[in-house]
Length: 258
Image (cartoon, rainbow, N blue to C red):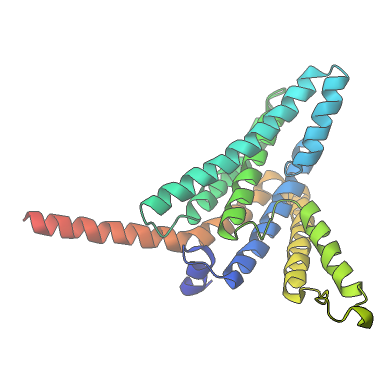
């Protein structure tokens, strides 16, 4: 990727176009991680609605261990979202270029750890599944909060329930018949640009799911490594910009001391 293009995608200066492009990439990553995680632990980790519903079922049936597992996933998702808020605001207060890149680097490290250690940890009975679910849920919360903050809640990448709902709304607007008898009323019009974004996010999530499932089937846990590399590449330019600035300031300080 050209350096300037990556800087636009993950730098602190945002544009609607950059938000959409980054949203597509992260939707692909989320779909792949979600599908691969399902094959690893037989549970989706981005679907908090389903997790909360299953928690209610397990509690009603007296299955307290399963209830606690669901609660752990929910808590991890919330903590991941909170972690993004902390990292973004911390970087913003220090005027760093990497305010949106830091959560991506953390997600990349977790994906690398999952890919490198997943096969070994899967042999530990009773520990691997709950820990993996919590780690993946943390990553989903981390990423979803990141995209929500940088797009001002216009884009979500880790689940498509809201996307499908918004798609239906836009299609309903397109099919609505604006009666000539009510021409004095505002016309109901479809937002074509928003419809394209919603379709793109849904398609990238689905394609990512297919790629993630096939990758896990073919190479196992190592299928997450390319996803982590993509995130590192996206986050690298703003991070290097901050490091370069830090080194320049440090050099100036040393020169003034001499």
